[in-house]
Length: 369
Ligand SMILES: Cc1ncc(COP(=O)(O)O)c(C=O)c1O
Image (tube, rainbow, N blue to C red; front, side):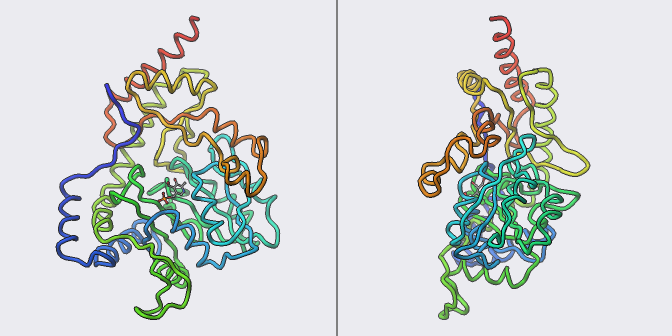
């Protein structure tokens, strides 16, 4: 059996929507782009959604539109994809890290609070692996400090915190549509969601060469628009997102059930009355991570490590800021022990059983030796 880590969907309805968009609309800024933005805003429960060519640009433009600039500080987690803090750097700010809560892998709000000073202008909680960050704690600790909250929801399309969708929980929410995400546009793409009309307008300008009107540019923007064909595919994918997320949750429940007896494994945090995760990844923890990964892969089970190197230990961050081992111990421990098992909506019951059987065999064998 060969089981991939993730499997993007491209069905006939998406192919037909793509062909129709290519044949009937402008390739850039066609009607589908604006319709996708409308659909996405409605889905998240916000007034505005502005598409971009990637999640990274959504984050960067969100920060710029909120007035983040040179000599300001942006607090975030070192345990994320590097784009999260790169966006702060591209906006001209200095990213400042606060370690994670090891139970959720998300930023520890109390530690983040310790990084607050007069130069701190924003915090970027990341809803890692599709599990919402503790937005209540962040709001309680940061709301009175004039600090903007930019959600990195690039792994959390459709996840909920206290009944509200990610993307509607901060000042701006940022999403990625990279092919492995819970929904994709079958290429790169991103979206920034907000209730603030002025911020949405600024993001729209920044992604479109700083255009005020067609030949007038009043800020330094980028060419970072979402292509029409990708937006057309995104609209079809969005309709299926809830169904796909439900299937992911069902797979997660199956994994939870079949793996719960293995003492040396830590399973991911689950659903509760507060959070409804969407399992972008199903991540387990073990000190035998590398051996387990090799064993599973020898049986055709593709695994991932998200992430083997926390951001502060990436070569460029070490050289720019002088970070070293030991600076963020929980993130470093996680990076040495996490393992992502196959997770996608069409993952079959038999496939989950096969993965779990091989995990049991691995730990059973180790007990005997
Ligand atoms: C947590 C997180 N932030 C930011 C990004 C950046 O998104 P993109 O790859 O679309 O630029 C990603 C996606 O890879 C991500 O997983």
